[in-house]
Structure formats: C-alpha cells, structure tokens
Length: 135
Picture 1 (spheres, helix red, strand yellow):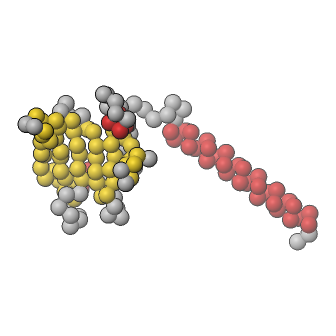
Picture 2 (picture 1 turned 30 degrees about the vertical axis):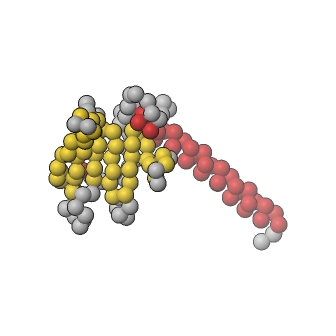
Picture 3 (picture 1 turned 90 degrees about the vertical axis):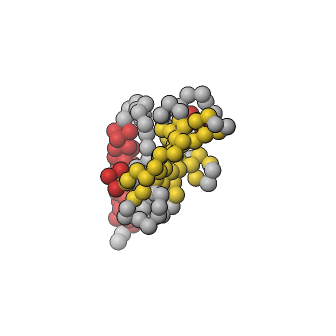
C-alpha cells in the first residue's frame, strides 16, 4: 500500500467515524425528544414485566401508630425467591420507590427524585440508587 493510499484510508475511516457520531446523535435526540423526558413516571428499562408477577401481600408502613404508606410485595413464580419485586407507596397512594431483582439476580432500587432531594413534593421521575448513592 502506498503512502497516498494509506492517507486516503485514514481520511476515509475518520470521515466514517464522524458520520457515525452525527447519526448516533441524531437518533439519540429523536428518541428522547426535543423537550426531554415527559412529566410522566420515568422508569429504567430493566424493570421486570408485570405479567410474571403475583401480588403476595400489601403491608402498611406505620410509625408510632400512624400509617405513613404501604408496601406491595410481588413474587415471580419463575424464580426461587419468595419476594422479587417491592413497591413503596406514600399515604396518598403515590408510588415512592421500587425494588426488584434484575435478570442477573442483582437487587435494583429506584426512588422518586423529589424524595432524594428532600423536597415536599414528589416529582414522578425515578432515580436509580446504587450502594446508597443516586446516579
């Protein structure tokens, strides 16, 4: 391969790389939308499908005799765990946090951003929490 052909090859590869970056950027902005995520509940994609889950029980969360919310416990009959999916609701019935096992058996937790930021109002946008730290 001559020096001139090597230069053409490198230029061709770099142009292909730049074109790929523009294409991926275009796809990412069209998938997310120009205005960003909607105000609806935003969940990570790895949540288990609800059609495999069976509600085991609903337990009240109480402090000093006052009911602050409830926990819904679900089981996936395809696993050997007794509880695979938990939902935490506040006293008004709004979803506050979700805990589940992903397909690799790792416990995942998402919490409403308003709760993590210590605000009085929930935002409906859920943040993944790893090792006690939101990401």
